[in-house]
Image 1: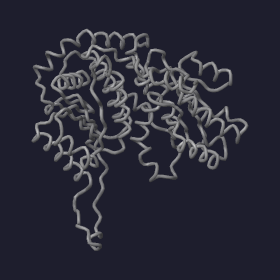
Image 2: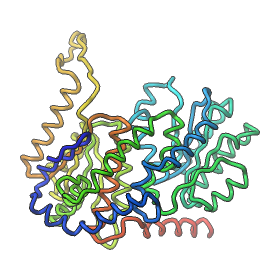
Image 3: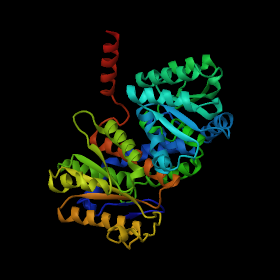
Length: 431
């Protein structure tokens, strides 16, 4: 067990020994020194510069300035127009803290709407919603996010949504903020139109950009504590710069995944025992898949939610091919829900246990079932579901995939095959 001030990474059921971890860790020594060099430089000259984002005061000041100019007491909706790395990080944090509960808290504002699809049905309903529900420009903020500035899906949604609002309001330009690379095509267009602009460091890749303006701006606008998010991320970064493999939990996690991969565990099922963390799993799915899946190698990430998916993939995981390593993610501090009496009058069996205790028993039952079947698993134990804990977990995972890519001898920061579908889609539209 590796235990730190906040998040705990448990690997005793990974079926990997400490001696194996130490041996594999020797190949990471030079890379750890590289990361320490990046941290000392405090800049973004290398792709690993994402580890410096949480300590960037200039970035924090820029975001605060945009917030001051855009936030009003009338703000109800922030529409984030982006896809992939341009929205998954912000959505992971938002859904964990608020978004999953939006339906249950209809009177709480402001809310974030993520426009990350060109699905015609969703697009039609979103435009209808904006036209009928937004009666004052101050009620809405549009955040267009694209590092490259020419993402097809984002461009299409931007035209659709802004077209709907321009037709209703004359001065909608004041309610738009654009996040993109400095001097990108989108930057020049937004600058010409007089829109608010905030840049992303050029060498910080989209899937590593959650602690840049890409993730922080929409989260800050809706009032989430980005300082605590930064605090957790910095704390984790420093812990993952040490050269002791049993104390560097990002390197340790990467080694466990790598050695299990070499034993045929090519799938990593990330089992979140909090449904509000499902979007966090989808963020990690992109991070792992795009960073390591190349040159014929790669760990396939899947996302499961406890306890619901114990009734679906649980059968496959326990009874199917033994080609998976599972990562259980759970929190030590859950809300206390006292069982209520009275349903027995309608024929229901009475339950006298608090819900946290029930979920804890289900989780322990699942882990014991995996042990009995000889299946490897690890655990990421968060102290709570808070901005600080989410900051730690996300930094942990971003540094983990850097180490994992190094072990696989692939470039963690490119995604050449992703461009294939984009070129084919553009060719199809042109023809």
